[in-house]
Length: 227
Ligand SMILES: Nc1ncnc2c1ncn2[C@@H]1O[C@H](COP(=O)(O)OP(=O)(O)O)[C@@H](O)[C@H]1O
Ligand SMILES: [Mg+2]
Image (cartoon, rainbow, N blue to C red; front, side, top):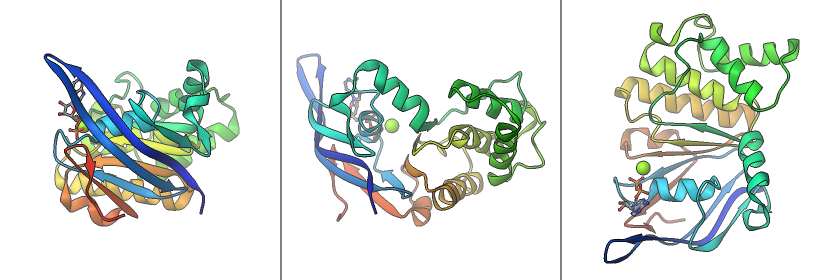
């Protein structure tokens, strides 16, 4: 199995009033293709900091990142943006669907943003994605007509419609009740196994860990799980 995300000895230091704060203290991580990985740890343990370094939005203070075999250091700003747009999908804690577009149109908009022309094949792909997240019967619903969990599943369809290699999801279940959170997590599990997408999701909800292929646990900027 090939590695999709590799981080080598990643540190991240922030300048804070009166000195420096080391949020990541030398993290090694390897996540294979098609693996659903959960990044867990208490609030403040460094999850978001690590995720934003692995998705190229932030740079480590020291260390290296390889994505699908490519060293991020070798990419300029434009190439990184292309990498994010074409090879990555993002899901956030607060569902940010466009309120004036229905479920189908929200997913279609994302596909356009990824640079895909909307032809018959693209339309079938949009429908397929909404069906895969269990919303085949909600395609024309507006965001206001859906539950929080349903809206988050539209956001997941939106994140993988362009067939990215990796999905980064930072606390996607934090605003959902436990039944909806389980359903959303199950949807990620399904996407990784059916489409071979590597998924890195952060959460501090212990009840969701069973769905993951791999768990990476952080505490005070250090990895404490047994690799
Ligand atoms: N831009 C920043 N400047 C200073 N400290 C930061 C910054 N971003 C994060 N931190 C600190 O780094 C630690 C880890 O934060 P974060 O990665 O957001 O944790 P988590 O996502 O696990 O809750 C926290 O102590 C936080 O206050
Ligand atoms: Mg966070």
